[in-house]
Length: 116
Image (cartoon, rainbow, N blue to C red):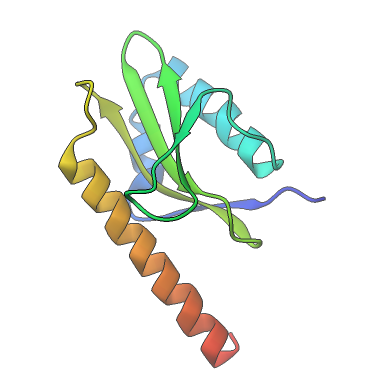
């Protein structure tokens, strides 16, 4: 099975690029696993964002999170990436990922209806 491509939604790519070097490296390793059809080493489901959405948990001196969905055949979609400063994920981070997920679902539906 060939690797899935990564599709970065919104500012997720620049958000990951803003991570410290070690967090960026670990994020890349985990996203590569997902592209290969494997689970990240540390993850949890985030159904409040959308069905199939997962959170990669990156532990360095700081905590970083990457929300993605890999259930679609064509790609792994990175919804949002952020530094986590408290035990509870900030509402704005969940809401931003939810908006991007909804937009992705609408875009995929529209594309399938128009045959493109």
